[in-house]
Structures are given as C-alpha cells and as structure tokens.
Image: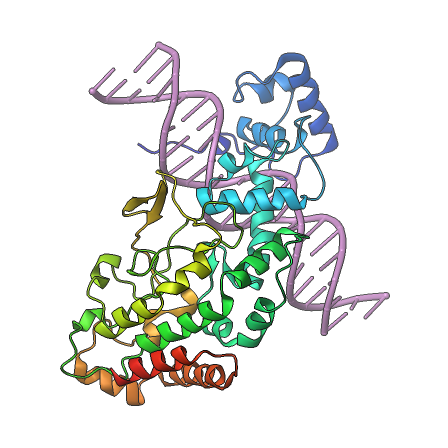
Length: 358
DNA sequence: AAATTTTACAACCGCATAGAG
DNA sequence: TCTCTATGCGGTTGTAAAATT
C-alpha cells in the first residue's frame, strides 16, 4: 500500500519558510488550545500549512522551552559521548540535552562536530582514530601532541580528546597502523605461508582480534565507545581467526602495550540495540563489538588490494607493479621516518624485520 | 563592489512504528 | 489479526547569510 504524502493532498498548501504572521497564529492557537490533532490544527488555526509542517515548526522552533544560542562545551561533550554510544539517534540524544531539539543537534553534529573530529584524526562514525594514510603520515604532529606533557587540565572536549588520544599512545597507535598497512600489502608472502589467501591481512586495531585484547580507544574517556568497528579487509571479523604466526608473535611482544590503552579504563561498547552489530561479547560488564563492517572510505581495500582474494602468484604481481605501489611507497616512507626517529624503541625495528622476513 | 563559494540551519520528504478501530 | 491513521524520526534539500576571491 502506498500512502500519499500528507502535504501533497492539497497542492495549494504553503511550503517553505514560515512568516512571523504564521508563527503568531500557530503559537496563539497552541497556547489557547494545545496542539491536539496536528492534522486538524492548520484549519482550526487558520493556517494554510499541512499538519506536519506545523508540528515541525512548533517542535523545532516555536516551543517555549527551546534553548537558543551556541552549544556549550559540556553540551558538545555530551553529544559526542552519546553519539559514540547511540549513533545517529538524534531524538534519543536530544532527551539528554534539555531545550535542544533533535534537529538542532543533528545539524550541529553535521556542520560542526563531525568536522572537528575529522580534523583531530578521529573518525566521527566510529569514534576511533582515522586510518587514512594522510593521518598516518602525520607522525610528527601526533608525536608532538603525545609529548606535550601530562597536564590533566581540560580546557575543552577537544583538548581532552587530543590528550587522551595522545595519552593512549598516539605514537604506538600510529606505528601499529603503519604496521597494519605494511602487513596488508601482499609483499612478503611466501608460498609456504600458513595464511589462507583470504586472510592475508589483519587489523591491529580490531577490538575483537587477539592482538590487543578487547580494548578500544575512546578519545573522550566517556566510558563508552561504540559505533561500527573499523574493518580493513571488508571481510568478516571471524574470517580473521587465522592470523599469521608472525602477528601472533607481534601480539605477544605487545602484551605490555595494553597498558597504554587500558590505563584509561576500557572502554567499550555497545548498547544492545546497536545497529550493524553482528555480535558482541561481554567483557567485564562491557560489551565489546565484533562487527562486520566495511572498510572506511579513506583506506579502501580496493586501493590496496586490487583483487579481493589474490592468489599467491598475483599477490606478488600486485606488490611489484600493481596500482598499490604509491600507497606502499608512502607507507614505507613513513616507516623510514619512524625508524629514523631516535625515540623509536628497538623492538619496533624487530617487529618490522620480523614482518618483512615472514 | 560584485561574484562566487561556503556555512548554518530551517524545513521537507519518506519510511517506520504505535495504536485505534 | 489486519488495516489504516497519526505521529515520530532521520536523511536530505533549499536557501539566506557570511566569508572569500
């Protein structure tokens, strides 16, 4: 059954911006009678609008309890934290911000907060560090942030986020992401590798992988983090069960690293109604997402892997001459820079050597 | 100063859902 | 249980204002 749009029934109904006269009529009517049936209201109030338009105008603009003006830092923090848990459930988020409408919050998110998060290197969809190469290559900035000191003074949610990101081991994070990209490149695979063809990569940031326990970085320290997990291969998490031996070794060598993330307390995860969640497991009263989720646009698997499941033979071909070459160069350049950094620990060199020798 | 681009946000559209009959 | 209506919700669009060229 197809229902006709309510506002198309009478094409003479006015659309577009409301005039002050219309606002006055609507406010006057509702203040005297309440809104009652929205569909009946326009005629009763003498408005040439559809009921839906009247409801929207009232709830988003004319309602007397609406708060106007800039969002405070506290409100920003609340929105970000709630968004990390609820996703784009604007009406639910709005219930925690008295005087703010879902529409206003949605607009503010889309025009301000999203950009701020992106600028900080945080994926606004996942609330996790971005994995695009530009971000990865911006090592010096992250490292300098990480070394700024341990001041706990928070001046804004953004400072907080940056500091937490840094405190959580931005340098290590970046190294891991580079490692991941390195490992995703089918450069060093040999024919006797134990890794099945479709498991030639591994997401070091994957909370469900065995590499780092189940810790997810929450840049805002709000206690919960969620949203879809980043999946770099576009395959099911559970297809990554067979992780190459070399990376088990890396995992073992990085056990101590958990403290870097975990020091904040872990973070965690999902409300049970989280959309797109294929499964979750309880981890010390925390839901940890194990989700099938596509690769972020900025690091498309296709850009690194022209084929979805290349054979060992064409993996080599790809690695030598395929379109992934520029990305590989960038990654290796970043590694070179990293290795030149006198602050790099020797074990990172060991890890790299291990991976390349695999 | 004019033209163009960007930004902010009000409003619309269509789908989902609750609930009445 | 089914059908239908009213309302809620989230994505998208339109447009005025501000910023930039």
